[in-house]
Length: 269
Image 1 (cartoon, rainbow, N blue to C red):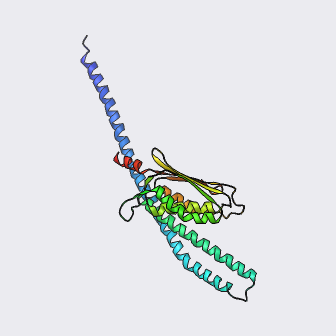
Image 2 (cartoon, one colour):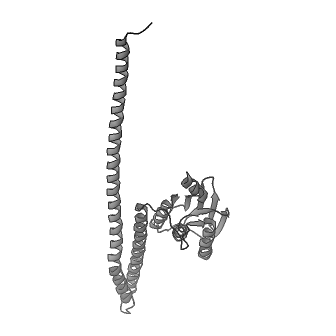
Image 3 (tube, rainbow, N blue to C red):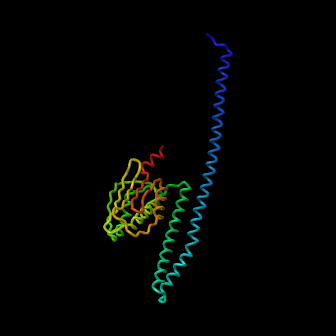
């Protein structure tokens, strides 16, 4: 049975209207998406500018405070040498000198953090070495770092136990990753007591490299905690596309970095 032409016309007209409505909706969605992308791009640019300003401010603060601090420390040292000063005054001056040293260390960390934030804002997670390569053996780096810390822990009566996979390759800066490891070990050394143990495990996962640093023993009763070093280490690991979690009170830390093979696979996709 043939349909009347009017019915066919109405059906085609309805179909056309439906398609036109969908087209207009798609055009509107594309327009809104473009507006949102432009707004996101503008906000991202604004945040990056604010981040740069913050980093520059941190650098300027460190530079402006360093000379006055050095002057105050020099004056305190000179005053402490005077034979006329009582022992109590000399002890207070010595404490003042130590506090100034701590402030200077804090300023150094602020400078490092500002530098790392700038690199992150520039979108650069690669730290090429002098030969232009950014690949390194994390197990060799760990061995080198521990060889420097072995005497420090031995003098405290602390043992080191390590379990390390070989040929653990990552990409990044040897200088900064070593800096991060040293900061973690330095924080752990604050709570060590004689007879305790620092256990380090480094192993390759399927897609990542993991390192566990665990302090085994009772923590020291009087500990002056400093979270700045660990925070700097966390920023360094983050710039290298990894993460660091830990507890400075118990000396338990876990770190993860992308393996070199995983990064290479990601770039080829």
